[in-house]
Image (cartoon, rainbow, N blue to C red):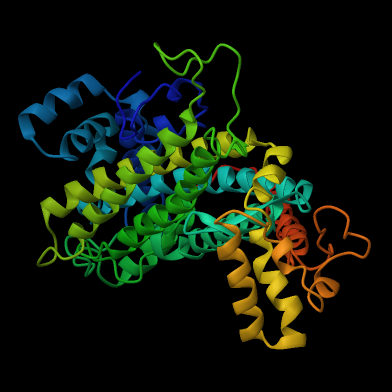
Length: 469
């Protein structure tokens, strides 16, 4: 398997990367630059900045398939310039029209716009995968709205919840991530056509209009001030990708820990024939989760590196350019790998409700302490109720009478336990132990499904490919 920004592991070969691996391949990058040169030429032809016939020739010729790419590669070695070898070949192939190639532009206008042009395609893949994940979680939250389990804080039993409530928490974070990613599109995926420093020095008063029209043709947005030194928009986007990845990291962390023998509550999909260890035949390892977490940590580091592009001095800087172009490509590759791993993880997620029920009651009922305290509080005050339940909980940990038995004194038992439960272990009254867990699970399950269904309908309504000349 070819090397990418992604950490490759044993699960990488099973993943459908949705075409994302090819987005920043050399041929795709060249074609993106040519697409932008074509869009610029066509707009300039419409505006009368260059002859319309020349514009048509440039647009028609601006295809990798039309150029001698071996010649381009040889010229790269000789010229050591990122764009000029490609431009030189385009000029040569265009004949007389080649005089108008790259009219009034700078290299970074093409490269920076090209990077974002490709990133926008990756962004759309990310949103599509995110909506699939929300659909899976929406169905899980609804199906498990009433599945009881132990809620944990600091790794210890806290209060009872339902599995659907846990899924609702994940859904809420991912709905926020979806909103953030959509909200920055106009600020991030921008066309930069301001010339050498962003002041439209070559095109003058016609420059801003040209930039706006090129952006419209490419399905992008026009940068408010097309300065080459302003890279905060892409820094912001990579930070958002890292933040979104942290939500998937959390999901993977919980699944990995919950699948351990000690918990045995949640599990990744496991197919017969998958091997966990060469020496321990019994091992069923959370492979998808582990690979996802490793790639998240790499993306976190990359988001820090991208910040180094924002403070470089003056109106342009080659060091920042290298980090910007390569860092953006790596961030998109990593993010796509993370999102796709998360989709596979959530789509195959399975639960063991019986084990969850068993774990819920493994603390001798002490997990119900908060609801017990609040049931007693109206009769004796919250402070006294807390002290009573605390003493019963601490003493029951040392052996002897159990937690419920220590709460069976007259005046207390009548509030807490069902009538007729005096024979054997007291049985708690059923109501109030899970808070609004079931309702929250159903609410957020419905929200996730609406988001996923709405996105699918929107995609069906706009099947035409975005951008291009």
